[in-house]
Length: 289
Image 1 (cartoon, rainbow, N blue to C red):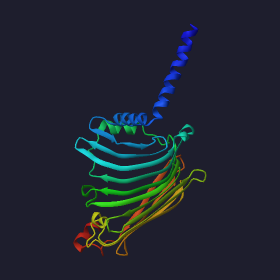
Image 2: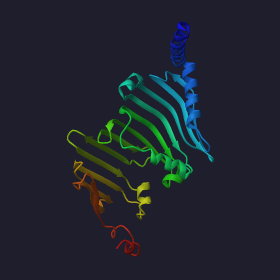
Image 3: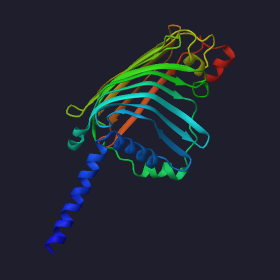
Image 4: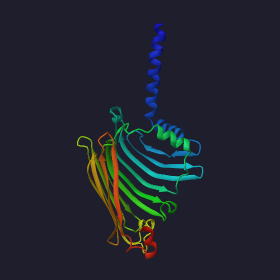
């Protein structure tokens, strides 16, 4: 009987040590990536993870990642380099020093998922986050967006950082710039502090003449467009001012506000006014009157 107890205790320990030794090797980590790719794939959707260089649990690079559906590949990422500290997971922290990606290509929109899959996701959704996240630096050198998605081919650079403890306790900032000669930029910063219940949102964007945003908005002559969102307050009394201008002339202005209703719920409201008569032909402007 004593021998059986020893086997019962030592066997799981030996298996655990063997698995630990396996995943500490390059071959074991590659096998782990293949397993993750297989588990993440299903009927009509597949995840491909390319070759690993370096360590999966520390500093490393993955040659390529691809997402596909029944019509083929719709998104790829190449030269994915990362640096993170897996030991922090024990304390509930996902500590990522950096993520740098050479190229992300969005070739087209993915096929819609089945209704049952999306319903299952919504049923299991929660408001809290399972881990605290710190992303020291995000740098995506090139993002290629296909014309079928944005109306015209777009090439972007994205950088940023984030520190997120929960939905109401987070700081994040990002910078987006076009690389295809257009010269458009977008800067965004959001900060929510649980202790003071404060919320700050700042978004500033500019696009010179000929940008795709003016096309999406249906503005004739494709004028330069600027966007400004400036919001400050608390989770019980928050107000954000919105201003959108074309060729230096405002054509949308308004605000969005979040107020406490006093019974544990909040009310989200806002107003907007348009000034588009000077930007569109008279016939079209009547549609917005």
